[in-house]
Length: 162
Image (cartoon, rainbow, N blue to C red):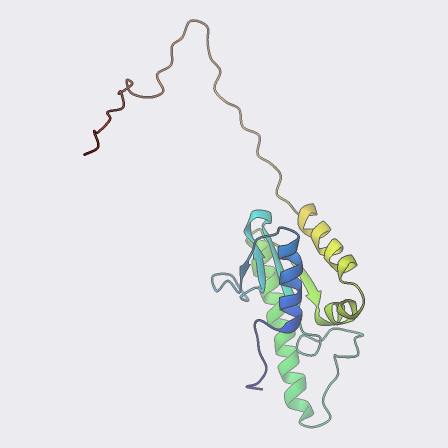
C-alpha cells in the first residue's frame, strides 16, 4: 500500500488540467478543511473530491471489487473509508461548502473517449452552486452636503535628477 499515491494521481491531474483550461483557479489538498479535499474552489465555495472506485466503494462499478485474499481486512478498511467520507461531507456542508464527488471511473472512461461532457457537468455544478451576490446599498448623498473623503490635496514634489 505504500506505493499507492493519495495525491497527484493521473485522474486527479486530468481533472485539474481540464478545470484550469476552463479558467477555474483552485487550491489543492487543503489541510485546513476536513478530509483534505482534492480540489478547493474558494471563489465558488465548492469542493471537489476525486474518489477512487476501489478505495471509496463506488457501488455498481467494476473497479469496486473486494480482493480474494485478506478479505476481512479489506472490507474493514473500505468500510472505514466510507464512514470517514460521510463524516467529512457532513462537516464540510455544515461549514457552508458545496461538495462534488467525481469518481475515478468517470475520468477513466471519458479520458479514452471525450472528457468534455464530464467537465461540462462539473462546471455546471460549480457555477450552479455559485454564492448569491450580496446587494449593497450605498449611502445617499443629500442636497447641498459636502463630503470630505480624503485630506487636503498635497502637491507632488519632484526630486531633481543628478
